[in-house]
Length: 181
Image (cartoon, rainbow, N blue to C red; front, side, top):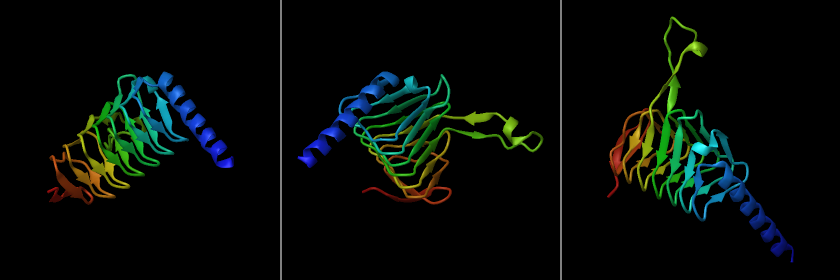
């Protein structure tokens, strides 16, 4: 009986999280699983989630201003403690795997010498990730990057340039190291 009660409690919590998210977000597809301690921040109405999406515990998804739209496609998994922060826009395709501790950030700070760092404006450029992409643990995807369909990003990579379809990249900065066959 204890196992049944435990399962019902877990199912009820999952149902409540999805119900609350449904009214906070721009849209949420069918069969979406949102773990505990997932945060949708600042402008959650600009966040759109596809069908069959899984978002693991501790993920943070932030639309940082009224113009920043985040779209995550169907059957995609967002790993534990992954940060997705959009000041311009971030789009993730269908059937993607995003491992834990990945950072997708579409902005950075100016670094001019003649002005204080905290006074310099953000520089933004949208991120676009194609379908069937695998992003390894701890990878960082920087502003303006487009990742083609079927690409693989190695664990710990820092991606600052576009990645062609079906290429495997790794390193700091990320370079093509192989190709999916």
